[in-house]
Amino acid sequence: MLSNDEFILLDELIYLEWDAYDDESVEELVLDILKDDNLKILMDKMSNCVVSSTKEEWERTLEQILTKPNLPKLVIINVENHKSGMRTAAFKDSDENVIVVFRGTTTIKEWDDNGQGAYEYDTEQQIYALNYVNSIDSDKIIVTGHSKGGNKAQYTTVRSPKVIKCVSINGQGFSNEFINKYKKLIDGNKEKIIAVNSKYDYVNCLFNSVAGETHYIKTSFQFNPLFYHKGSIMLDYDGNLRDETSRSIFAKIINDFSTSLVSDLPDDLKSITVDGLISGIEAVLCKKQSSDRIIKIIGSVLIMMTYGKYFKIKETFALSYMVIQFLVLPLLFWADFINVEETKNKELLKDILNKMDKAAMTIINKLKLTEDSKNPISKNLYSKFDIFINKLHGAVESL
Image (cartoon, rainbow, N blue to C red; front, side):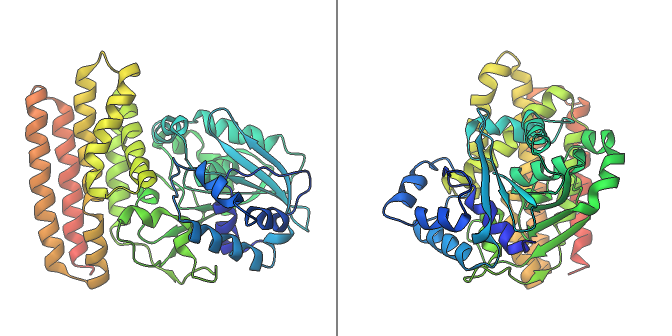
């Protein structure tokens, strides 16, 4: 059985768009990638990748794979690139287990599906993932994936009796609608699901977890706080899993805030808001932009997204942009929250909360210019944010 660090490395490997011949081993594949300019050729295909890494980082990852006891022996039995942008691969180990790896988001085609996972029961790509697992002639299937791939892995574990184990790496959570619809299946299968998360990853704070077992890993410092989402930073230089730690004290508060805020929105506003938020986060990750530019990036993403779907509903666009600003506020201060937790600096936290409160009032005042000031949406926004701020104030005492 693979270790958690081996699952992380396998989830990294799927991001490179390699092809394999029948029954090729992972060792043979990796050695081939490291030959000549093969790695550079594969990296050039990843210009839109959520886990952008340097050539040196990829070389180290590939070399780490070769040093592991189980990974080199895996046999590749299938690789599939779906027209929707989904990429998955299946491997067989020495015990005849089939290990299915789902890639995280890398393409524009997948952006919509990411957001839909926060407000729908089942997304198109989740159904594709389920069908892929069910098509495999085995009842000993292990699933894994990073980010959206981790979400797909968890989804298939909940819905397919063929899955015996799931390891999700920094996987995003699920909508309230999904939790309510599949409560019995979740309760019956969550013990199969292991979540391995970076302590300060922002994405796994969003929405509802279905994992029966969760591990938080202390990572190296990242200048851009969004880079805590990269799976590889949970490994040390030798490819071993870094030390386990406790969950960030701010993670649950942010999780409750994002889930409650989105769940109360009307359907049309909910969809465009979450699509825009997730897409904006991933655009920052792909392009290695500073996280303080995320509001501007999200605005650009919304314009592209709404041109076809929502162009005629200008009010929806305006409201969505305001709601996203509320949702993204904690992210804009995420580096400061990390600093507070590491240094136990209560005065810094108080300063952050004052700045966030002022920013929230600015958003509310803009919202009042676009609609009736008594509109329940604007009142609900500030009410949710007020609860969020009060919970953060309470966190001061736990430092």
